[in-house]
Amino acid sequence: MIIDSHIKGSDLNESLKNFWDLAKTKVEILNKKYDASQGAPVFTINGEYTTRGWTEWTQGFQFGIPLLIAEATGDKDMLALGKEKTVSNMAHHLSHFGVHDHGFNNLSTYGNLLRMSNQNILEASKEEKDFYKLAISMSGSIQSKRWTDVKDGGFIYSFNGPHSLFIDTIRTTRILLAAHKLGHRLLDENDKQIDLLQRAVIHGMTTAKYAVFYGEGRDTYDTWGRVAHESIFNTNDGNYRCPNSQQGFSGFTTWTRGLAWAMVGFPEFLEYLNEDSVDYEGIEEVKASFLKAAKATCDFYIENTSSDGIPYWDTGAPNLHHLGKYQDRKAEIHNDFEPIDSSAAAIGAQGLLRLSNLLKESDPTAAKKYEQAGFTTLRTLLTNAYLAVEPAHQGILKHSVYHWPNGWDHIPEGQKVPANESSMWGDYHMVELCFLAHKMNQESYYTFFDHLY
Image (tube, rainbow, N blue to C red):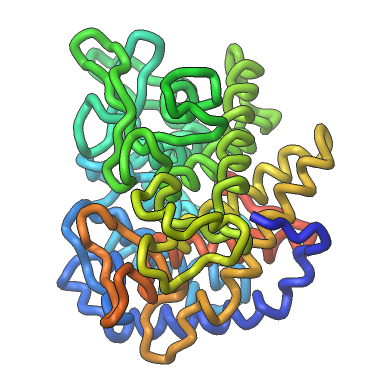
């Protein structure tokens, strides 16, 4: 990436103002035209949202988008829509034992509603607030139940099974942190009490150790900040076995959306741990591990993305070499070899901004670099080349990739790689990124755990 060393958040104010108008329009279009009987919307084909039966991990993003728009703009219609859709559609996600996605679905909805209620943005009775708290607490408990013990820790396992640690889950563990902040704990067999903070921290430490690489010689391809999408463990003896990937090219290359989950997940975790009220034995070691992972992944992103901040879908994609030194020029949306992934950019840019905020006092030079890298990326995403400005398009952010190895992504006629389509996670994280930038421009800040009680 070529970081603009002069860019400031305030430079994006006009683009952000226009973005909220666009985002609201797209929410209204999707609400009017999408057939909810299909299931949760996942990604677009020719600009129209469709579903894909893997897991319903995107519905919370759909209803969380209007809530963030409402908080940013004061739009009461968006607030009413987000609340009504959450209350009427999200209950089954709270008790979903089959996924590692609780932090995605339920903090995007119930979490945002509780934050807004406690700030009086949403008028809510004590009973309504208690309902949101109960939802978060229940979701955190069920997420934490997906647990595998290994020799030197443990982790919340993916839908692939108890042997499988996904990098994605470093961000969904925030549902455990939110539930812990609300005073909740998991009661397991024989009334064994499970501390949700401890479980989340152990998961984070296992993820930092095995899913992120630091150039320390773990394998032939070990470089600073490389990320494995999936880490495989032998559940019989608790040993780590190998890196793997579900949506990337291989376990020895870096799927950039997985990289982005780590970029935002570790800084968010650190923000939580830096709260004065957090009491955890060995917390300084934990913080050092998470900060190392955050820096490594953000550095890898900066080093391996296009000049304008947009990455290709995997930094080891087999045909990427045909594009030459792609890091020295803007991302080529329509090329003949490998697709870009704007959703990874939207997620990763938030990580860059959060890491910057963490380093403002201890390392202001590095903080400035990460902040300007985040704003450089956001500026690119706020252009018409990336926003779905076409009136009939139901998405917000174009050029997202879902599962290229499986061939699930739509390729436009006459093209060779996917382009022009949106995803529900890309749209949500673009809205969340803009919300964070909006708050920063107001000399404020946003975390998932603010105003939970």
